[in-house]
Image 1: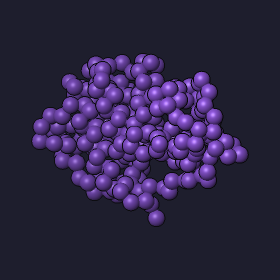
Image 2: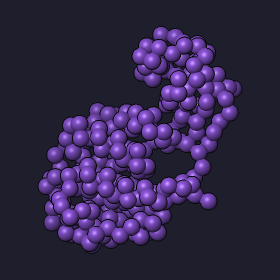
Image 3: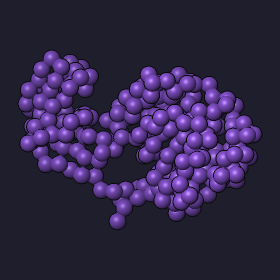
Image 4: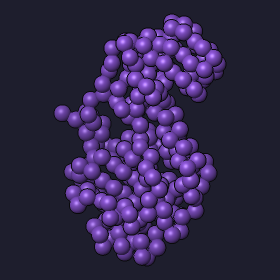
Length: 239
């Protein structure tokens, strides 16, 4: 068994405990046995090789080996503020952005938005991040931010951070913009696009309108396009 499991409480003195849904999945679905080897990760770049020592109804105890700390990565810190699409497209969006190494996803509240980022929706997004990390081998969770308006994002952006606005009429995104930036915040609007007021306000406050393809993209496609471009500069560890 080479499964990966997310632990909210780091191991102590060579012992770790898996609780709740993660433990039930390991015990009942995967039918783990004492001695099975797994990998535990805490979402902050730390992993532990581990072996099952006891299996209970809703908890599994492990004996852990030495901590492994993931080295710092290269490339820009990337925040994507996205007007969430509807239904299952949200799940797909979170899965792909996690795989591509996006640091933070912020549900963007816009005038033409079609999906509300309710507390239950945020919980689903956070669970989706954990599942995607388990599958793809990522050891740092993508953060899910609180729902935020375009105006709030603009007001909170530090001057040194590069701001991008996904816009079909913008200039083609230059990879050098991502390669040389320590941090990037990109805004992706809803299916109906940003309003003139939202677009004008963003551009007046230092957000650069960029196009990502020769055709109009759906919300999740635009977000993935930016994430994929940034991921090109994350392929080697930072020195």
